[in-house]
Length: 127
Image 1 (cartoon, rainbow, N blue to C red):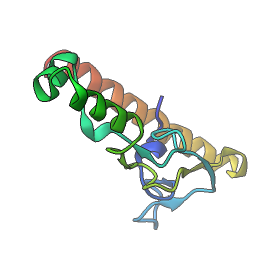
Image 2: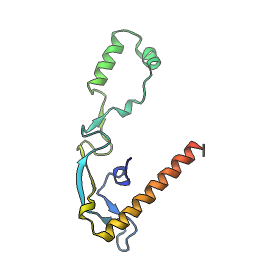
Image 3: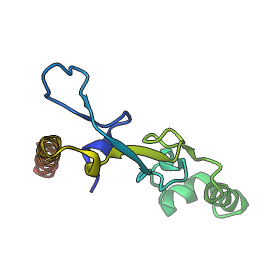
Image 4: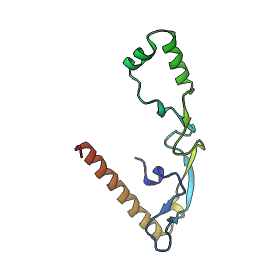
């Protein structure tokens, strides 16, 4: 499950604190990027090719095999959108938070989780 912090490409912050319009900066630590698994790149931009797509585009011969070999070798990969190729991201460090900040952070995470759950349910219902 991705947290709200994994969805952000900036330093972890806590929202809704008076006097911190850009968010209250949270103590953070580095973790391996969950999007690219620390590779810094991924081939998501290619979409999902089916066997029929490959057959139509390349036929069944050498060109198709060359494309697959190139794809597996990472020729079509692009920089990860989450870490921008750095391979790590900043995530909140709960051990460094005060109890008050940890409570506010947990409430923010719960609210984000519920918002995402509602959005998924609405999409599933065709809304």
